[in-house]
Length: 438
Length: 162
Image (cartoon, rainbow over all chains, first blue to last red; front, side):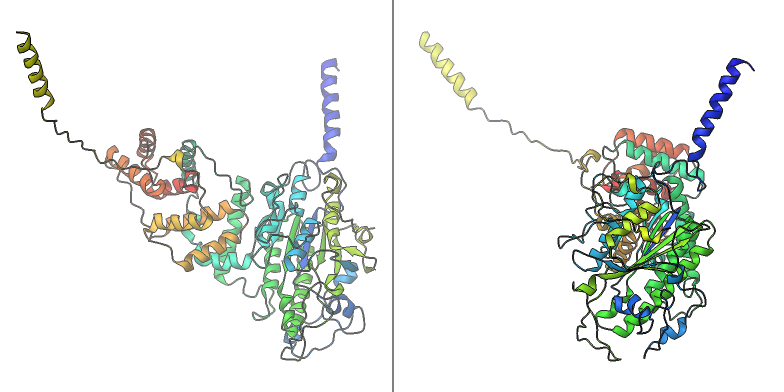
């Protein structure tokens, strides 16, 4: 072999050897510096204020199980619970049997408000009374940490925040931290309002047909480009995240498809449980499932909040707990049956609990309401960790009762996706929920 | 003799000094003052953007109900640029929007379309270069229709400012 050929082949072989380990099964060229436990994480914020008594304490105690799909324990018939009768009980293992239940998790500091609880879960930093609900959070969110501390940075289509209501919640997809911000934010959607109101106000077939050919797009780009060149200011869309041109095409196609499904009534009873059973939590989870099926994101966070009727109607609270319980199990089932979502870990956690004392507001069935004003029980929540993997790292049928904190969710997700060591020291204060993993 | 000279000089001065001032009349030609693009430095709020876009395309104010719905949709999706473009496309593709057709009979009529479009959308007169370039581009690309021109201008950076 000629010397030059030999050197060339040696170089190619060496280069291939060096590069090969960084081409991951997921198609990514580079990984974050840490090893991954899974390639997808779905976080379900089982929010709205779920009291330990009605969730894991009842289920695993002797009071009857209100959440039969999530927790072990026998159910009992509740007066006025027509929803529970429809949703029934699971024929398969409970989620508790399939994963690890942390039964002693605290929102240790800060107000026990819904937005405070959400912000704490998504930033890994406790909030205080100065939290501005009219602004994005001060500290970088899980989405920004994920997108920034992976190399190369992750596409926005890989990070989703799906909320069941508007108000301050859309702001949780990125922070005001100048080192992070919208460039690293998540794609956000509040599906019910977007699809239902959007169908009436911004959808039309012509809308999506407009500019739908290359020649038209070239002309539009030429005309717009000329205008932009002759205007001194650049409009930076600093009020929202920006997707790449390729991702925008995928997103617009997804939006159009879902507008058309909305029009056809495809979302009226997507789980075949009866059109009147659904609440906003269930429909929000359903749409999160649609995103999972379409984009297979590496990180998706979805929340529920309808159990907050507990302030004045505890019977509805219990019924909505059953709906949320069913929805969480449905979400997990969808993850397990969606090709491309193998190697997923799901984490479910409420943002805060509810007071131990009732508030005196009695519903039609004689049940008293509960608020969440900062007593010790309003700081108690559970956390469930589930693994869908061939060689799952997640322990099954395990209960951990050592004290954990809601600020532990961010470092745990970072650890699962292998970028926890890339987050600058001091950014987050929680600990990885290591007991969930073997 | 000397006295006659001084008397004549004084009389001459008096005559000149007492002459009637001419009555000048200054007239101004009417000039329409339009904002230059460089002066636009205030970013429209979301509500302003939607309201102004509606007004520009329908020549009437948007109803409070329609505005509330569109702002709700705007808030419900993270990538604002996608929503904005969908809103503009919806307005433009609506048969009730008042977008004039391009009269392609002469280059002058196309120039007139450019002029009027700039006044409607950018609220200013195009400068000579803008007028020439866009007229030439539109005139030489037969496939360009008025909706495409309106959409291009309304999704440009300048339209985000006032």
